[in-house]
Amino acid sequence: MTAACFAALGHHVTVRDIDAERIAALNDGQSPIYEPGLAELLEKHADRLTYTLSMPRLLTAARIVFVAVGTPPTYSGDADLSSVVAVVDELSAVGPASDHVIVMKSTVPVGTGQRIASALRSRGLTNVSYVSNPEFLREGTAIGDFMDPDRVVIGDFESSAGDQVGALYRPFDCPVVRTTVPSAEMIKYASNAFLATKISFVNEIANVCEEVGADIDVVARGMGLDPRIGSSFLRAGIGYGGSCFPKDVAALKQLAGNSGYHFQLLNAVIEVNELQKRRVITKLKKHLGPLDGKSIALLGLTFKPGTSDMREAASLVLAARLIAEGAQVRAYDPVVGPRAIEPVRGVSVCPSPEATIEDADAAVLVTEWPELVHLDWPRLRPLMRQAVIVDGRNALSPQLMAQAGYVYEGIGRIAEMPADAAENRAAAAAGVEPAT
Ligand code: UDX
Image (cartoon, rainbow, N blue to C red; front, side, top):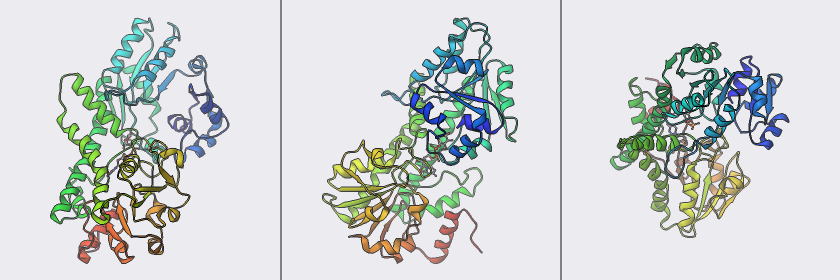
C-alpha cells in the first residue's frame, strides 16, 4: 500500500519481502491483498516499483526504508515484535558508513523506537536514523486515506531525519504532528483505542436502548451532531474486528499493565466487544427457541466490507457459537470463499446469498457488503423457512423488511416507529439532514 502510494507520488520504490511467492506474484503484476484500487495503482506505476527478496539490493536502492511488517498479538496480549526485530537485524548489516533512515510504519509498543535506536548505536551504526511514522489507513479505503490524510505523525530523535520523512508528505495539505518517537508511537495506540472505545460505548447505549424503548440510530445522530462527540464511529452493531482494533487495544492494555498501570476502561471496551457478538445468539433464540437443528444463514464473513480480511471477524465467533448450539450454519461472502471460515469446522459456504438462505430459519447480516444490503429482500422472503433477520450492522431498513414479511431484529433499533422518527432515522443512516 505504502509502496504503491509513494510510487504514485512520483518516487522510485523498492519493495522487499521474505515471501518468495508474494514477490513473484507482485512481479507478475498481481496485488498481494484485496484492496480496492491497489491493483490498478500497482499496474499504473509499475515502472517506478521494483520487487526483491534481497535486503542488500533494497539498501543499495533506497535511503529511506519503511518497515511495514505485521505485529500480531502474542498469547500475553503484547505485540509480537519478532518480524520487526528480524528486519532491523538485517538492516543492521548495512555497514557503518550507512546513513539510512529507518521509518517505522508498523504499530509497535511505546518504547520500541528507543530500543531499536540504541541497538543501532551499539552496533556502531551512528549515522542510521530512526523515525516513527504511524499510519492510520482503513482497509477498503486505504488509498484514499493515504492520499488525503487527516494528519501525518512524525516522531524523531533528530529533526533532520524527521525532515526527510516530512518531505515525502509535502504534497498533502494536512497538519503534520512533529514529536518525539514515544509520543508518535502512543498517538497510534491511543487513536485506535479511542475509536474502539467509541464503538463499544455506542454498542452499550444500543443495548440499553433495547431495554428502554429508545432507538440507537436517532440517539447516535442526536449525539453526533455535537462537534465534541462527532458522528463517526457511532454505528452500533455486533462489534469491531479486523487487524488493528482488537490487537492494538489489547497491546495498549498490556503496555499499561507492564508499566504498572491498570487500564480499567480498556478491559471494559474489550469485554463489551466480545459480548456484543454473542448477543446475536440471544436474539436468534428469542425468535427460534433452542437453536439445535435450526438452519442459520450468515451473510458476510469478512470483518467489514471492502476487504478480504478475516482477522478477528465477528463471523468466526458467531459461526463457532452457532455450531456449539447445534445449529446448521451456511454462509456466503462476496469476496472470500470456504478457506476463510476453515478455522470453524462445519460451516457450509454457498455460492450465492439465495442458496445460503434457502430453507433457513434465520439469516444474520454479519458484514454490510452493499450487494447484501441491497438484495431483493421481498423476492427472497419465500425462500426462507422462517423469515427471521438479525441485522448485525443496522444496515437494512426495519420498515422495508417488516413490509416484506420478515421478523426484523437490529441492534438497539425500534422496528416500528412513528413516520417522522423513521424519517429522522433514514436521514441519520444517510448522513443528511431531514427536511423540516
Ligand atoms: C482501523 C482504523 O480506522 C485505522 O485508522 C487504523 O489504521 C487501522 O484500524 P480498519 O481496521 O481498516 O481501520 O477498519 P475500520 O473501518 O476502522 O473498522 C474497524 C471495525 O470497527 C470494523 O469491524 C467495523 O465494522 C467496526 N465499526 C466501525 C463499528 O462497529 N462501528 C463504527 O461506527 C465503525
